[in-house]
Image (cartoon, rainbow, N blue to C red; front, top):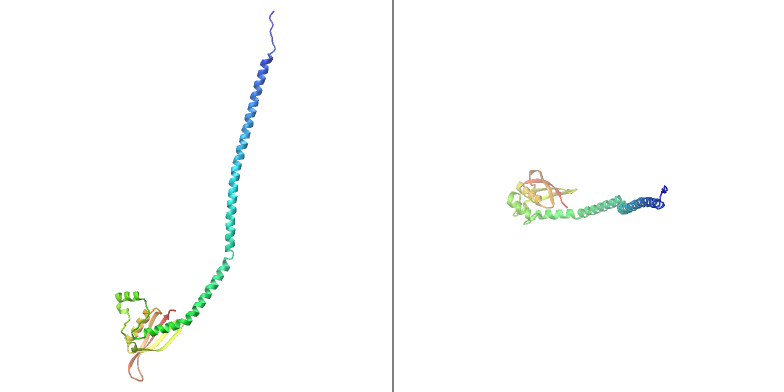
Length: 217
């Protein structure tokens, strides 16, 4: 008599159940590992970005500190400018006082040199030599007899000088004009209209002249 076993084999069923469980566990472990890996990557990226942010924040703080320091330094800029202006004004005032004391004296000494026999104006030697080559007629005559001209008036106001005098002729006046123009102490020298006159004592014909100039000191 043949027996047919219609019930499944317990060992086969057990092996099938065990295989299904292993596959499920591996899948769960894989998913868990992927999640953990993603979390680690995210944490690493966050750490890198956090470090970058910290560095940028520190740099911004340093820059802001420098800006604050500069603002502190220039906060009283207007006050410093005002003090500097006051100091410059004082220096200018002192310089003007010193010039007012010594300037007219220097001008008179220079004028005395111009009108002294054998002397001449104070001028740059190189400039004078160049003028001798380029335009000799503008150079003063070293042999001029200064006794041919004399001054009768001297007036200086706000560094504007007016001279009046008498000369033997117009060439003597022109010589004085040339010398004053070459002098470092005078500028803008102008010969004003003159006239001939007769000396009351000698009855000699003379030339009456007036000159204007700016003085430097």
